[in-house]
Amino acid sequence: MTTKTRRAAPMAPDERRAAIVDVTVPLILERGAEVTTREIAEAAGIAEGTVFRVFPDKDSVIDAAVARVMDPAEITAALESIDPSLSLETKIELIVSLLHGRAVSVVRFMTALGPREHARHARGEGEDGPPHRSPPLAEATVAARLLESDSDRLRVPIATAVDYLRILVFGTTMPFLTNGTSSDPAELADFILRGIAKEGT
Image (cartoon, rainbow, N blue to C red):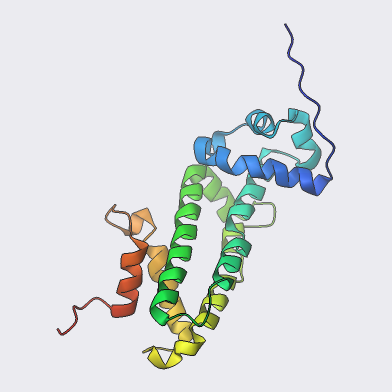
């Protein structure tokens, strides 16, 4: 018995691309770069040929998925929702928690892609160049704005404080920079606020 492929509902090209990327991101987390366009099409409920009506090849689909994961819009919006009138301690905890969650997701995704895709993007072969290097650091700008009212409590300029915060958050999510244990956002926020030495020493 022959199974007929359900005809995809009409969509504008941009909508179709977005729908395909929606299903590609979790598939890459599960299958890595070995995911096939057939698997992508099945997950999207479309014929495989429909994928190639909006993407020239599988690499382009992967590039779009990488761009989606690296897009700062979601994390920037989340940071902008933080009330700047909150205490410094609470704002640091929220900022660290959000940045930590994003960093873990990005590292997990890029690890799933594997070395071949890393090398391809490092050579600038992605659809729009290497998306994981694209500025601007919008989240850093929002974080700095949140700390403006607490500048008198900071030992370093706000921009430096945000740099240190981001370096610590992202560094503790990189497997090759840690001892293999998972970092705790709450513990990290406390460390950023109080430093490495015990109080009174």
